[in-house]
Image (tube, rainbow, N blue to C red):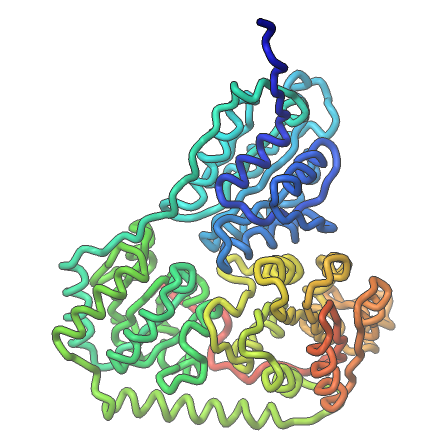
Length: 559
C-alpha cells in the first residue's frame, strides 16, 4: 500500500511549541529578518506576543513577567543589532538573579565569515551574563535546547538564558516524527537549610542587644511573604525592607525601620540578612554605615553569596520560604521574643518617628513648581493598594521609596541591584501583560522616560492600563531654564519645558499636564478612571532635592 503524506513542521513552529510546552505564556519582541515567523508561530501556539518598539524594553518586560509570577518570560530579537540592543537589559536579569529567555535570530549556518546580513558574534556578547547561551545547530533538537535553557534559567541560581537560531534553521522543515520533543522541566524544589544552622541562627539572635532583620527581594521571589511577616512579628525585631521587598510586609507595619534606615544600619550589632546581598545597596556591610563589629546571620539559596564583604557568623543555605518555616518552628518551640520594651526598640521607634515628621513637613510644602515630596504625596494618597508601582530615575526613584507605601508583595519594581536606567517602560508593559486589567503606575524622571518613551504606543495599541507620571525637572539632577541659554548646555540637561503629555496624546493615549498640586490630584484621579494608558507630565522645581542625608550614597571604608 502507498505510504500516507509525511507531516512536516518548520523550525519556527517547533520553537514556539517547545516554549509553550515549557510554560512560556508571554513573549515580547521586535520582529524582522529572520524571526518574524517565530512571533507568528508563538501566537498560533497560544503564547501572548507583545510587539515592542525596541529590544531593550522587550527584554525588561520578559524578566518582569518572570519575577511577578509568570514561569518564564521570553524576549525575541532580530539578528545582529537587534540582539545586541538587548544586552544591557539581559545583564539586568543576570544581576538581579531573575530567570528569562532571550531568543535571537542569526545569520544562516552556511554564511559564516562571508559577510552575511547582520552577521555578528552575538554569543560572545551575551555569554558573560547568561546561565546558558547556545547556537542551535540541528532542527530536530530545538526542543532539547529550549528545555536546557529553561532548566538553567530556573534552577540553581536563577538567571537569563540565550538561544540563537540561524535563519535557515528557523525556516527549514522536517518530518514531525523526527523532532526530539522534550518533557516539561519541573519547577525548582524548595530546599531546606541544615537544621543545625537554623538552630545556630536563632541562638545568635538571642544574644543580640540591637538586632535588625534586613529583607531582600529574594524573599519576594520565593513567594515567602506569609513566612517573613510571621518571623518578624514572632521575633519582635525591627526590620528593614530593601526596595523590591517593600510590601512583603505592609509598609505601615509598626516594626518597620524604613524611616530610621541610617540609624539602624549604623547601630545594629547583629543583622539577620534574608534574601538580600551585602553589595553597594547595603554599603557592603562596612563602616561607617555599619558598626565595625557587626555580626551577620545570613539566609540565601546561593552558597556563593554567604560571607561576601563581611564574614558570616551563621550561614543558612536554602529556599527562603522553606527555611523561614524552619525558623518559625524553632521560635514556636522556644517561645523566645526580643523584648518589646528594650532600649533598642524604643530608640528605633523614636528615630523613625522623628524622621517621618521631617518628611511629612516636606510633603506639605505646596510650592509651584512642585517639589518631590509634595508630588509624591499626591501619588501615595491615590495609589490603589493592589497597583503595580514602577519607579525609575535617580532622585525620583530614591525619594519615592520613602514616600510611596507598598502594602502587597511584588507591587514595586525599580532599578534593582544593577542600577539600570531605561527599564521603566518594559517593566510596566510586562506587569500589565502578566496581570491583565491591573493598574500599573510608572513613575519616571524625564531622563529615565527618554530612554524608551515611544513604548507608550505599545500600551496604546494593546490598551494597557498603565499611567505614566513624568517628573520633569530639566534632566539628570535638575537644571534651571536659564542654563540652556548658554552655548555650553548642561551636560545632564534636558529641555525643561518638554511636554511629554503631548507626546502621549500624539501616540493615542490620555494626557495631562499638572503644574500644581490641585492639578496633579485631579489628573491622577482622572487617569485612574481610564481603562487604557495615560501620561501625566509634572513640571518639577529644578532645585528640588531629597531630604539632607547624613552619608553620601556610597560611603564606605575597608578599615
